[in-house]
Length: 591
Image 1 (cartoon, helix red, strand yellow):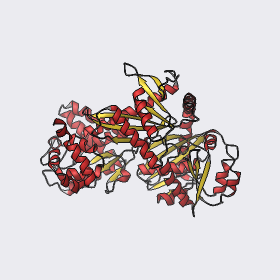
Image 2: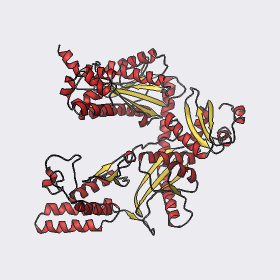
Image 3: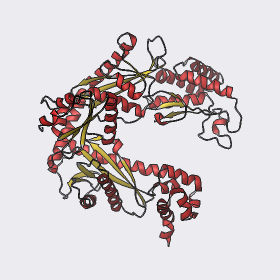
Image 4: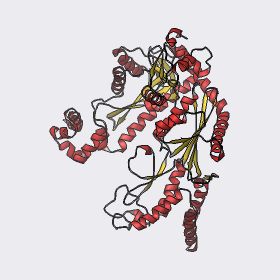
């Protein structure tokens, strides 16, 4: 640990954000403080343990930015964390948004399961979140069968199958009264808010009718619907005097583990719960505030939040612009205590497994560092590519930190249509990745993991050397049965790693993940159809320009018939030239 005694004397006793840096100058931790001098000095008092001790050991320098208020320091902290994704800030394992049920605000409404609802601009009705996505889908399917809502995304020119089986009123061919639609949507809204009695009565009548008509198959199906309501849709009632709508956050910290529990209360009902366990350092309060802010970037912001009294509710309230309540007594305080009790119980159940897993990863990282002769290995980047129709290639990069995936750092690459083989595809992806990293001063990896043997490692060495970088490289070679059997370093030396060791297992998981991600990108492009596939492979064309081209020309045939000038009117000259070459490449190949 370096001696920062003199530098610490200059740190003011003011609010602000501080940034810890490693010997390469990368920001490895961002925090905030009411009093910068006290907080920053606390790291160097020699009593750090666990993950905090690891952070302090890696600190080569620190900087700080003074702010005029605690709110400003929180805003600055969050923005710096987003920008630098520091190594020692909490690593969110589950970065997915929860599914919600959406009743659209259209002339003819639809009911569907949606995600990323915070980005939606239309004033649709949202119900949820549903931690159990299968329950959300079952609910939507059941309601869509019971109520003849519109099913099509766009109204067709003639009636579809749903109309003929009485699951749609035929909005495309009939003028349906708004009073009829309102009656349906009011009943659906009431049900999704927790009142299931009238829907159960409706299903029961339909079931009796089907049974009397000797349609036992339909009767059995309706009985299963009733079971679904009882099992997956009935929520736990909370003893509250009114229909509250809020989220509750509580946490427990043991050693370096932060166990977080979230309760979703809707209409006075415990609608669902979420749990997550993260590794933390000593500042669990900062980590909790960071977690809550990140949580609402992916999910719908609650009308109100309940928090324990250990968190800075006032600053969070200012940041999120909603009411935050810290109950001191009564049923709401009991709910916060119940959430905390849940977090403690779960963490105690998980603790031994978490510690064992983290110890295994730490030992595997130490083993890898020794084998490569480097001080430390933390951030690893791995590459793979896949082709379309045997010709068009796409590339993929996945990123792991301490053998945990950093999914926000994953990257997909459109590869030049002139590329016709795996090695040249890999050469292009590697060059673009690390040239961009140098130009934008991005964090470089401690290790590059290639999915392949000597040829792939050679290509990687060539690119890394051409950019004057010094990054260790390993390759995971496969045997004749396409199973990974050995690991080689950048000098093609076989590393002494047992095939049944944790290190071999973790490296294989990275290999599997990059292969999965590349295949996913390939299939995603292919599923969009030939026209969209071509456009996805043209440098400079994203979603906006793709839509403009499709709107203007409508088909591949018309786009190929267009002149370079006509294409330029939509996407500009340089991009139009790229597109023109791709569209006419097949013709050139035939010649």
